[in-house]
Length: 418
Image (cartoon, rainbow, N blue to C red; front, side, top):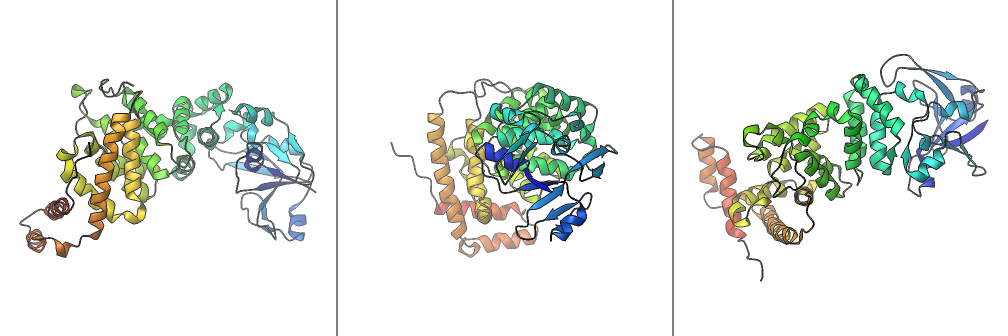
């Protein structure tokens, strides 16, 4: 029996990156031998065992035979005679097909993985790659996670797979799983770039794909179109916060619904985008936290574009929501989205915009903090307004506006110092 550490842990060791998950492959053993040594079997489709002391995963070396179109449609062949080289043929990328002997530190590399790691290349191991449609999205995710570039032949293979409908055989939950892992990468934009290049973006997020066809006012957006702006905003975000990356990606999808006759004007795209973001979130199977924050931020991402004096009431209404969701860090997340939107333009100097944004953020923070302290009982006329709302003499929005007006009264705008 020989045991090798495999996969991402070996790759990340060579990249000097932290890695929490360690996986092992066992050569020359049977299921009975593993159980006799105290390992606990947990795998359903194929034998995976947990170490009796560390709880780490150990899998028997295997071969795979494709039996259908889905991600899990494989027949597995186990035998003590299977070699590490034969086992490596079922792995996705050369950087993940390295076998480390824990006893002496020797690394077995049958596919040129170490060279590809040194060059930052994602290259598929064999033609078996095309048997698993999930690997298209894994390529996109690793491009973001590792900041690697797909090899031309791997990109071409993925284009061919997408064109032949491979992604249609994946469950939505599988697609979301890879998408969500990529969202926590600072270079999440690489996931979107790579998905666009192989055609997967059009399948998953046609609204985002369409943004590249939406023109912008070049005096404000020299990059020329909404797709280029979105990519620049994602690059500017520089965050591992998944909700922020998700929202920056979708914040302008409402522009796909504006009147083409009025382009490059997109008046009202923020409000148009709110229900569309919720629709996209449902389609992706994203948890409600994503839909809730992204739809709110999308609907309110334009207020910082105008002078504070002109949007004070909108800021107060927004601050009320930020205060309500303080435990979910809405304020920092919301302002991070706005800042990424501001910086996501092909300009050389943002000094003036950054100064104005700092003033905007300071006042919004004061409003948010004040909103957390105010009780409805403190607001003159609130009880009367509430009664009229109950009697349907006023719309429910009247309550929010009464609250907002009191909030502005308690938190006056300070003029920036000269």
